[in-house]
Amino acid sequence: MHCILGPKNMAAARTFSKHWRQFCKLRQVRQSGRYTVLTGRNGPQSFPGTQHLPYHRFQTSAKLNELVNFYLSDIGEGIREVQIKEWYVKVGDHVKQFDALCEVQSDKASVTITSRYDGTIKKLCYDVDDIAQTGKVLVEIETSGGKTLEERSDDGQSSDNSSSSDDESSSMQEIRGHKVLATPAVRKMAKENKIKLSDVQGSGKEGRVLKEDILRHLGGERKVTPEIVPPPPTVQTQAPPRPQISPLTPPTALPQEPVVVPPKIQTPPVIGKDVTEPIRGIRRAMVKTMTAAQAIPPFGYYDEIDMTALVKFRRDMKVKALERGVKFSYMPVFIKAVSMALRHFPILNSSVDAKCENITYKASHNIGLAMDTKDGLLVPNIKNVQALTIFEIASELNRLQVLGDAGKLGTEELTGGTFSLSNIGSIGGTYARPVILPPEVAIGALGRIQTLPRFDENGSVVARHIMAVSWSADHRVIEGATMARFSNMWKAYLENPTSMILDLK
Ligand code: CO6
Image (tube, rainbow, N blue to C red; front, side, top):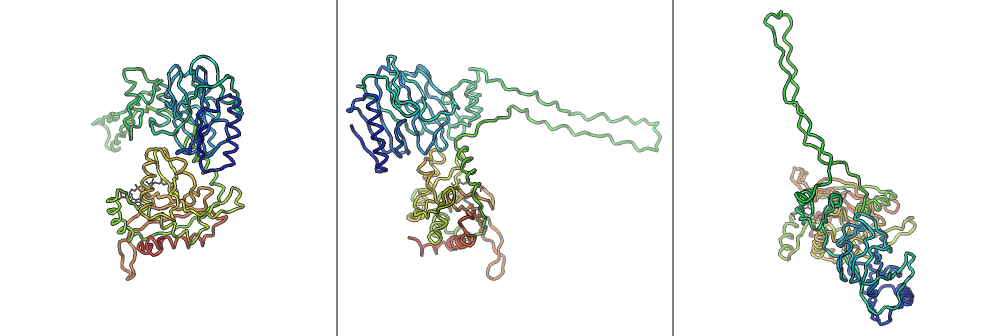
């Protein structure tokens, strides 16, 4: 047996080993079979029914000539359920190992489930948009013949009916880039009209399939599921006729001005209908996090930063960084200055447990940044900012933005944050009330840099670049004075960027 174990958790490895022996015994799989545990690039991957091993990926085997129940594996991070976004196969299709079967959406990522076997698809156990539970059967695949091989039952026990297992095929599921971008409404429309999204040429950003694309695709082929289109409203375009004034009318009463009713505005016909849908995916994760955040009593602290020197500094740095292939915004400086100030106020880089009975001072400064991605608001973090140069932070930020744009931010990027910043000013706005991300204890929101009049030291009005910052902190463990002192230090670095050089490590 070939076995490569990652460095983590030997106890878990022993537990796994026990389960594996049990598994092999019950299935009477030859000990010489291929069996590999790999450190997964994309986070935990495990064979269903085994003890969950963080960051390990498994391969296992099945006999040929059998009907195989293919279970949806644990995809890590405690995710128990996923939504089926799209099937890439249908009943009767022949698949090979690693062929994509379907795409599922968890709270955190989009995952392509690939086949473990060569065989024929006999049954798809879910429809698109259904919620599939990890550990339950996803598809039935017939490798050939008619026997059913139970990989495991729902309680995690192996229940193999097969006799011996000579042929080995490997199993693996992986996160892959291939997917069709579309909103749930468009997916629903495609489903209702029984078309595969992958057959539709998307005209939206990055090939996103839009409603119009579906309509275009359907044009001539099939009729769209009928929508109720109300008739266009009637438009009153003529004013009522003016009253005729008889020349014999006595001159006592002035002629009444006729009432001229302005024509009714022609509204475009309503072609849509109200849509109610379950809250899923990233937004569902946001519901959970923000609901938990409501348990935190926050206080707000606001200040303004004179960014005039930093605007000039950034202008120079932007050119230099671009020569080295990196886009340089203000964020790397904001992030580094946060880390430098956190060194003096470690309680702001701490986390508290659910009941707020223990506080943990975090050694790493993993600074999270709110990111507006096509999947919604995500907060990836830059790890160990205390040990990175500003250029390295810029470079990492570029990487996260590319991943965010592609909808490929994974658990590695999205977990482990210790302090967060939200640059709402890159979109607009001056102030915000950022919500603390539990178990963190503080977060800052940055407003738009504006040119505003301010007094200089001589009392003259001068144009300055001003940015507002809005901090929120957990008042159970953070005092307002601590936040104010931290903010002052951060502000001093930004207002005199060259002063950072003195304290840079
Ligand atoms: N003012 C003025 N100009 C700005 C600012 C501000 N605050 N921030 C960035 N920029 C400039 C930036 O320097 C770039 O200029 P050029 O280099 O000259 O082109 C430009 O705007 C674009 O910057 P970009 O957004 O690409 O990069 P940046 O590193 O500044 O930001 C990001 C990265 C991931 C933060 C950003 O892309 C993003 O997603 N921003 C939105 C974050 C968001 O959604 N926040 C809301 C969270 S919810 O806070 C919340 C409390 C509630 C309201």
